[in-house]
Length: 202
Image 1 (cartoon, rainbow, N blue to C red):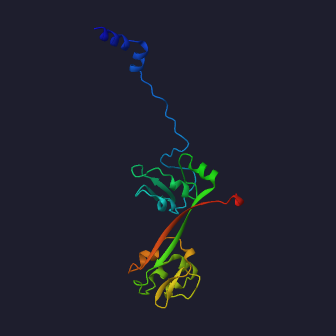
Image 2 (cartoon, rainbow, N blue to C red):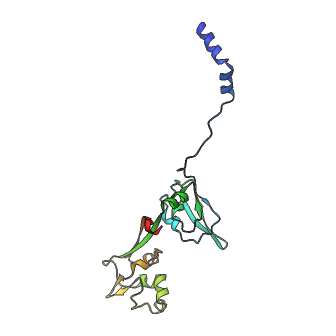
Image 3 (cartoon, rainbow, N blue to C red):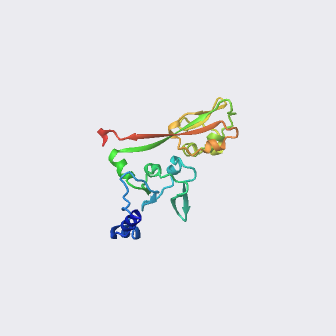
């Protein structure tokens, strides 16, 4: 009986009743490293699609056009809040947490490079890759009409019956050549490198 009395007496204390009837939780404080879903800034998107290429989560981000303007759309159901799209964007269109502040402090950045590779065993020398390449056509406008070029300034051209990569560094990663090849003989690999500005150049 005494134990019941002590139990009821403890429950009837004003402090206990107040905490029971009016519970309060500590305020939520996000740390410096917290990354929420990326949101848009007031900077204009140039639809380079770097954010879509770097995103490791399928269908988490999409760059769409509305009227004459482009902008990225984040899908929270797929986004894992890694912040890579924020770091890669050259136009500062996206922001989340302190990602930009940190990369600016550390002078770090990401850089894409593209490496077109021709499988000689599949290539039949049709030249579709060379003709469809937008960079090739810009360098040699006659390529679109004649289907042939002898310029050494283009990215690729047919040499001795096979497509050859001449200037890999000029590739923009559009994959037009890859999509245009009827034999699947050419692939464009994307390489992502994390870099830091040397102290001497800061």
